[in-house]
Image (cartoon, rainbow, N blue to C red; front, side, top):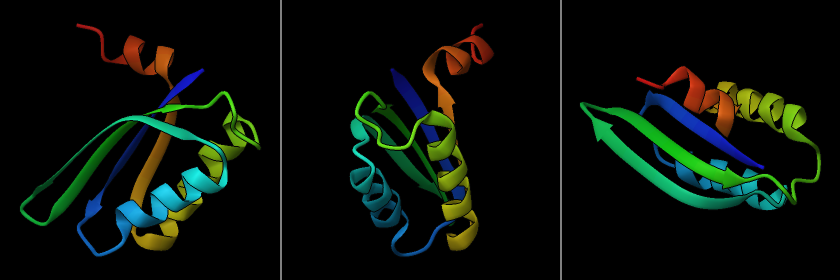
Length: 89
C-alpha cells in the first residue's frame, strides 16, 4: 500500500531529517520525494511504501501529525487512492 505524505510550514533546520528519521524507524520506505521552499515556506510531498510499516496506517498518520505539531509544521498522511480521488481534475 502506498501513502502520500505532505509537510507544509515555515522553513527551519531539520524538518526533512526528523520526518525521515520517523519513517526509517517505522520501516516506511520513501519511493519519491519533492520539496520546495517559497518565501520561507517549506513544502514537501512524499510517496511512501507502507507495506512494512510496523504500526499500521492510522497510527502512522496520528504520529506524523503529532510530530508536525512538535516541530511547527503540518504533516498529513493519506492513502494514495484517497489523495488521487481528491485531486482528480
